[in-house]
Image 1 (tube, rainbow, N blue to C red):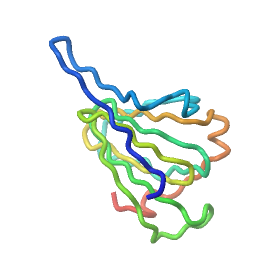
Image 2: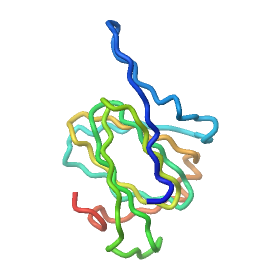
Image 3: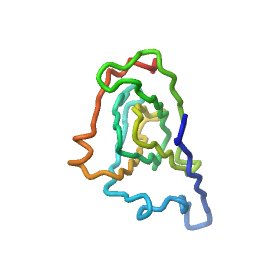
Image 4: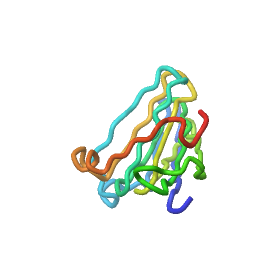
Length: 143
């Protein structure tokens, strides 16, 4: 799908532990306004669908693994249920970020109990609320 990209990171491990990083992700250049963590204790729980016309998101897994599914709505009040989707698996063993530009709906679920995902946004919370759209979790994808 257009403009969705993966920003690859790296890991360094020695006797002191493991250092994971994504140095190519520039918070200032991407105008990051906020971030938040979500912990999923139960892999059967699905968070879908959240969408934004303009707000961008970056997803990074701190612990465990997540499946993230993206769809580009064709109509923001009554979208088709037959739209194509793209799915991604992110896990904490392979540091990388998924960049999702505005114009997409996202849904995700943990693949392991206790997984934690960090989401970065280029909108403040008040800006995000104005640009927020929600759709039924079973609209485009069978979780």
